[in-house]
Length: 153
Image (cartoon, rainbow, N blue to C red; front, top):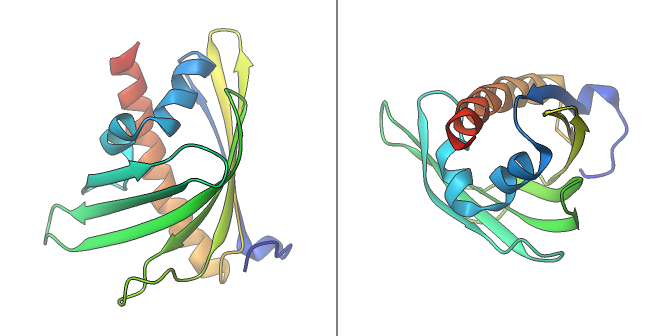
């Protein structure tokens, strides 16, 4: 549930990228760039749509390279402060295509010389186990984002 303050249900990750803030922000808001890094190791993102406006919807599919299984997620942009902050909901689709548990993600981008500090926060996870699972997936996404940004520079 979004808005839950139980620390076991909140995920935070900080990452420093060797790229300017504008470039990192665009990697989060350009569907073509999102498709290049969104998804954990062993997954591709064959479908990414994003109406990057407050109230706009986004939807993505990640596909396992090992077995071709697809996982869909969706959400709504709640706040966009270019190039400083993104706030959006995130929910995995249930088997019937409806959104599952909705979480709230806030990503803040801070300039640090020629680098960018990204502060990622996901609230409303179901449990500590859910948080830990998401930590692994997002960390692998951010590894791919690091590689993507090095190619874009």
